[in-house]
Image: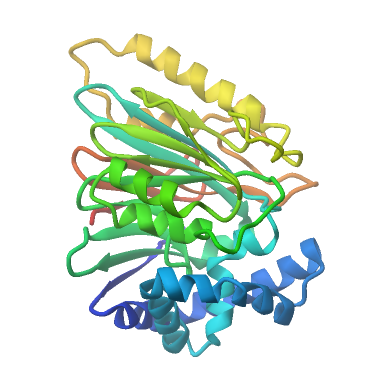
Length: 349
């Protein structure tokens, strides 16, 4: 059973990145090999062209978010890897012009006495060995813990203020190099002290490509459906779910390449929550195990909420995370949450 490598970073932006890069050097090297092959096969882009495309973001990033550039330079230094290769990892969603193939199911459930944010993250099985648990302490900002692909400085996790974030990839064409890349938008959420702060920041900066960002704290959650031209907020309510397609209209931007199973998974997770909600009475508190059990569902397998690879696709559930935002901690299962005897990693910022 794989155990996530845990890396704890602090100091300046460069020092944070350098430790990340040094301790995850092996995983970063493997991730670069993986993405070099992926971009060549899926987009016809050789790695030099990928790095050249990534460099298009550099002027805007340096002008608006130089701290992220410094951290990525630190990662590159620590891993002994060119900076543009690390930048390419962090803007991988945008490089393929919105043709990302990640799948996942995310949910927020506030029962009144507790608030949970959770998801299954589905991606190519080859990348599972390159996942890490990255924790970051910075002056004047909440402490962060996240599960991320090695080399990527923003992903899925929570912070010491009780703010958590999840990501659903959406396959819609379009990229704006003057907006914030998707993974850096996740990092921005994790550096926020509240949902409202995160939403205000992202509405101001915009997000460079299509995705759904679910940001939550113990009081509320907001779904941000992003395209390269707009951000549409989903209504805040006690339960919020999302998969891998646009729920709201985004003008001329359409998710023409959406997973056929995405609406099926969304309908299924909503039904599971409804059924579970009926069985919870006033004396029973919603627990982490209740949330994880929803994401163990294998109806419509292999393209279920808990996803398995098929002859046509090597995409599968690579990890499950359930965040207790009230208690400010999370439990992570590397692999499918449905597997017998799955090892559970407990993390907290």
